[in-house]
Length: 538
Image: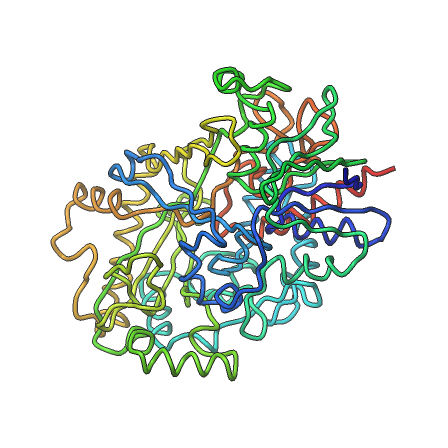
């Protein structure tokens, strides 16, 4: 039996940081259990290659939700990373921390140490921002952030101009003093390659003798002695193996897998566990509950000028951008699909933005089987303006179906299940059309392709966004943090309420979702969590 000081379940955005920070002093031994395999794959390392990983079972859990009434009965596809680096190895790389008020709300909910002023030094310490250091940005940290302002498609400038004509300010840094406005996105890349949590944190840690990483190792159960977590049972190459932790077990398996493993281990809603014949170690109705996610939609237009479609679709264009990428690590393949973006409020009375914008200088109306057709866009000049809600009030849940760890859990998203979410999305899609109607954009648009000019009434707009919306891959809060065991899974030090030797440190602990993409905040959570763990070691 293997014995380590710490066992980390999951090598994703938080788990990779934990492995690095907990092992850095050389004092502690760390075992990382990763259900997937290596991140050393071409389409993982090439930024725009995530179109190929979107459905690839070699690197992706490929979860499916239950049919969702809020999405017109659709079954939504939920990709999650199943490899070193987790979802940071297959995501769109947009680097957004969240709004100051998001974290201040976390602190105000009874979580000391989680306010913006306490977390800003962590964000700055972990970053190496190409845009340079200032009051908000950090340089010299392990994770490189690229400034794409001079690399984006020329059409992005028209989008930025149209956003300003629609009343939004130009914002040079969404991670700076304020989020509101339009601008280009900073992305987690370096020298044209994806800067995942594995590349920034785990790979350096793996060079240390006190770090051991097991791949293809699916954690199946946490082992307890009384109320203390002492080990992890895992499946690897058809065998059941066991590892013991001398100090702590840390779940960093993400918002789907962390609650799943807890429930498989007898931690969770009592009725669920009893119904599946799983012995209850500690009942907590919050495990797997309070699921929050951002839901988005694209409005797609046919242009009068060339877009990325004209270069990414034909074989000769693929050859050109491919050669450029291989030789210079630059060009469209070195970027995210989201060249521009922004944040806005659907109601001026709101204290901070509640909607996020995405500008994509290509279109994918015509689907291609088996992949997200980023690398095979439409045969005409198209582009999209997308948006997603930032702090929806709808809540879902993630619950196991059986005691078999190989069975995917039941994901009930409940998208658009509140009137408030429907009303704000209705206002938001109208604002997207307003941006498109501004002179800077209108003069190069030949037609709106999706949803199309026939969709005008409020009822039709709502029907359309229910039918065409989907996750933007930011599930959180399924093991949420809070001081009250009746309402939360972990306390403000990320220890599981009612148990010893067990913490959860990943996006599942977010008390509420944040304004923007969740990867930066997940990595911050790993860093902050490591600080808390180290403080508690005697």
